[in-house]
Each structure stands twice: as structure tokens, then as C-alpha cells.
Length: 283
Ligand SMILES: C[S@@+](CC[C@H](N)C(=O)[O-])C[C@H]1O[C@@H](n2cnc3c(N)ncnc32)[C@H](O)[C@@H]1O
Image (cartoon, rainbow, N blue to C red; front, side, top):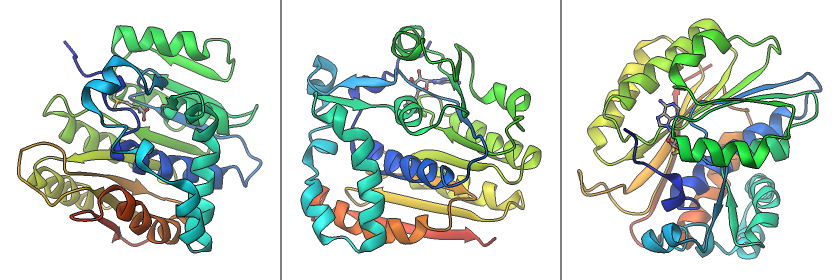
């Protein structure tokens, strides 16, 4: 039985990195006219109220998205960082103005075009219902209350021939570490050109080191790791950092992140904050 609800965490420092990367990956993909397939294996509810009891209970958004001063970030960033921050800001700001924060499905639906296709999987019955209520009218979207990992074999490669896949488990179950790595390997095998974003939390660094060595053993190329932390690792006493493994990211993304992550860290965690953008395996 799943108990994780993203409403408690929406807009935290992990969402800031994840959605900055997602928005810029989608933005780059929009440069080509050919239709795109977007798969969100762990979609969540899609939209979150920053003033809800859940958000107040953890205060995570207050230490994340609500703490960011975008005009100051944009004024200080280099040209690539500024473009990346602006892309993220443009997609979240209309909702922030209403005291809300978009989840990955809403970021994608707002950025994708009429001829693109979205496939969203969410297992939790309450969040699945919220997701349906939010975007049921959108004919580009296919929904399933199914295990996202197990849908990969049927959905990849898609007819569209271009795919962006977000794998964003809660890691409530320890097996998520192994299942998510296997999922990336399966996608690579079925569609080596797919762009994959696999999110991870840093609670025990050893789990992340294991993911890196397992991914590198698969033989996949163009593999990256990006990370943003608010404290040094503390080995099991909560999430101190989070990151993404990226397969085939846009070639512009590394510079965009190198020019924006230090500024985000400066605002969110001026002492003890950290970031990295690493090419684990070249193209
Ligand atoms: C971190 S949240 C997703 C947040 C969302 N991707 C976003 O960025 O806004 C993880 C979600 O995955 C759901 N979930 C957990 N295991 C799943 C599985 N095997 N398949 C599909 N959804 C799952 C949880 O109910 C939860 O809503």
C-alpha cells in the first residue's frame, strides 16, 4: 500500500531541479516540428496548492520554490543560465501567482503541442483521480492507474519516433532503486535515442553510487548526472540532495545548468549547498 503523497513535497528543492531540467528538455525538443511522445511513469496529482495543510506541514515549498527570487537569478545568470531559468519561470509563474505549483504532467501539457502525445501513469488512487480531474478533457493525454515501470515494454518505442521519458519514483520502496535503473536500461535497449530523466534522492550515498555503477555497466552512451544539495551527505537522516540521471539530454543543457545551479544554491542554501553536472559516459 502506497502512502507517499507528493502534495507534502511539491515545490521543494528537489522539484526545482527536476522541473528546471524537464522544462528545458521539453523546450529544446520543441525546436523540431516532428511530434513527440512524453511518458511520465510516476505522474503524481499534477497540481498542488502551496497553501494546503500538507504543504504547511512540511514547509518544503517555503524552503524551495517560494524562497527563490527569480528577478535576482535572471539578473545574475549568464546567457544560457538565464534562458533556462526563464523557460522554467514562464511555465510555473502563472500558477505560482495563484498560490499553486505544477507537477510534471502539467508542465508537459502546458509546453507540448497539439500533435504531441502524453502518457501518464499513477498508481495512487487519490492522486490518479486528481490527475484525471485536472486534464481529462485533453485529448493528447492517455492515463493509466498502472505500475509505470511495467508499461515501458509496451509503450517504447512509440510511433512518434521521438520520446522523452520521466521516471520519478518516490523511493518509498527500496526496490525503486533497482527497478528504475532496469527501466532506463530497458528503454535504452528498445530505443537508444530516447531522452530519459531518472530522478533520485540522496538519503544514503551508497544507493546512488550503486545506481551509477549499474547504469554504466549497461553500455549506454551520453549519460549524465546532475545534482543539487542543500547540505552535505548525512548518511540516512533525511534527503540532503537530489539529482537526475539523464540519457541523451539536449546538448545545451549542461551549460544551462552550470550557469544556473550555483545561483539557485546561493539562494536556497548559501552555506552547505552544493551542485554538480557530470558527464558519466560520453556520446
Ligand atoms: C515523486 S511523485 C511524482 C511527482 C511528479 N512526477 C512531479 O514531478 O510532479 C511519485 C508518484 O509515483 C506514484 N507511484 C509510486 N509507485 C508507482 C508505480 N510503480 N507506478 C506508477 N506510479 C507510482 C506515487 O503515488 C507518487 O504519486
